[in-house]
Amino acid sequence: MTEPTLAGPAIAADAMQSVADRRRMQLQHQVLEEEANCWWCSGPVDQTLPGTTHPWGPVVTHIRPLWAGGDSLARDNSHLAHRSCHASYCHQLRAAAQQQ
Ligand SMILES: [Zn+2]
Image (cartoon, rainbow, N blue to C red; front, top):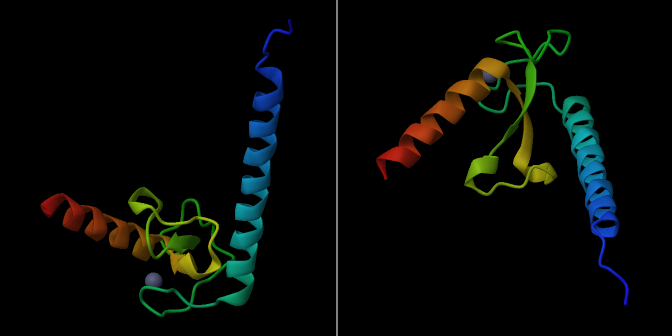
């Protein structure tokens, strides 16, 4: 009798996770390459700004947010946005969701 081990499934899950991460990174690069304007305000996005800290820096925004079941790997759900616009959009969506 062979003992079931967790090694197989755990390794497979790790591999799938890294594949998803790689696809997400590729998609982010694709969005940054293909788009130049903010999805929410249509203004130009300066991609030289740090998207992680600067309010007008570039981020990839999801039209249908991930917490609402949006697909982070779908190209048509992912668009370029200002960090600030993305944040206020998320804030509005959450507020609207809480009122329902
Ligand atoms: Zn914007």
